[in-house]
Image (tube, rainbow, N blue to C red; front, top):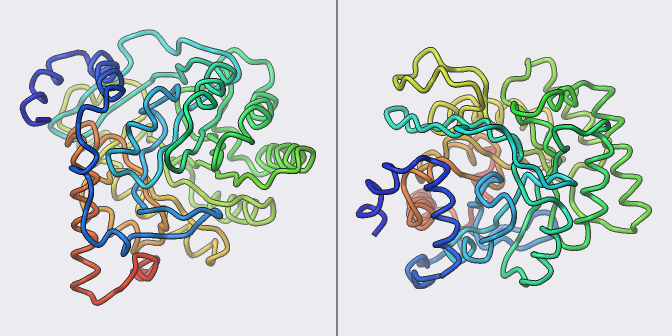
Amino acid sequence: MFSILRPFLFNLDPEAAHDLAIKSLKFNFIPAKLFEVKDEQMLNIELLGKKFPNPIGLAAGFDKSAEAYNSLLRLGFGFVEIGTVTPLKQLGNSKPRIFRLEDDRALINRLGFNNDGAELIKNRIKSEEKKGILGINIGPNKNTKDQKNDFCVCLKNFFNVADYITINISSPNTAGLRDFHDKEKLKNLLLSLNKIKKEKKTDIPLLLKVSPDIKDNYISEIAEIAIKNDISGVVLTNTTEGNRNNLINNNKKEKGGLSGEPLQEISTNMIKKFYKKLNGKIPIIGVGGVNSGKSAYEKIMAGASLLQLYTGFVYKGPLLVRDIKKELIQILKIEGIKNIKDLIGKGI
């Protein structure tokens, strides 16, 4: 069905096509059985105090305001991350702000954290019981006077409705956000968030989402700070502002974060570097160019325990998750491995 609809969807403005997809998902018109795979127990993994049916998750950015997370879980995802959510509703940057690079199997976006705001989104989640593992990605409002406080407000709002919360310091589309990669600023932020966890008596896992554009000397610092400040997982990576020179499509000139295949090798290399520094103390969630069983396998071998995708889902449609799971199971059988966890970091 997606192959039939794809030309129509790709004739639409990317954001219009996305909005249509979110609205369509709510109808659950595709049978969930279509997305089931044989021997999926080989992909079961326990992490963050949860049992994931498989390691393939949907990255933040697709379901920004928690409108379709249960419908997305029906497509076979092991987990879904919504957001980025900010304390107050915001419209984001001016349009157009999403650009397809079809020849490069990539997207560029400069959305700017458009979402319905923390209060409405929390109420939406409470009104519709989640039917799987739900992560919430949080960030600051564009015009806030205190970005750190915005993170704190979001944590206080969502600690009792999410399965985990991702601290997004990595988007290139919010001014000053990536400054939190700085050693002292990051320590200060995590100290404040952990203080809230203590006050609220919650053990909600906090994940840290990192930019692919940091210099190598930041990796050791961030890894050390994450370990010392009880971070439960590191998400590698967000979109990149670089890596445009070899792209084909003219949209490569657009400002914003680049995602999809051109990010694949960059994020995998960063996973390898962080995996060595984290030394098994904190798991990695690998993101960037996951669009096949092979690309998923490469990230797991590089050290990722869980994976997320977005751009591959846009280009290949709802059966992508099923196909990735099938390929991974086939690889496990060929290599004589009983469970996906035994692949983690084996390529290092």
